[in-house]
Image (cartoon, rainbow, N blue to C red; front, side):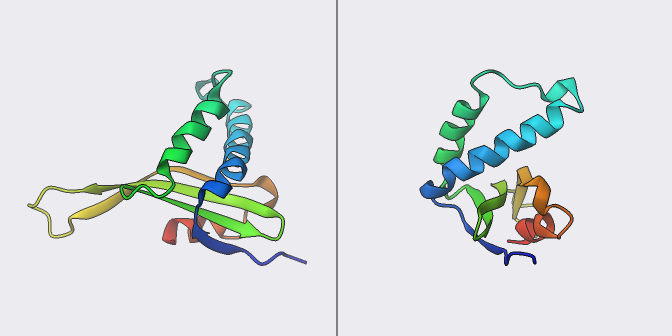
Length: 114
């Protein structure tokens, strides 16, 4: 039976769960490519960084949750394009992570749409 997944803006209470997923993602990628090898204090540095993004008007941090906790997150930075463009606002996604056991369920796509 699959757990219901809810999506919402992250709060400061979510930082530890987001950091756990960040670490899971790092381990996943480090096994596949040396480029993703992280520093010894990467999680602590990420914790500080992500804490600054919660409530920041120039970023968007969304979590996917189940009754088991946070199973995914998406971090995007909002940018204003030059006035020459009709569509002035856009976002750049820097992090999109879904826990391995919850992959292939469309959670990543839904996080991006949030």
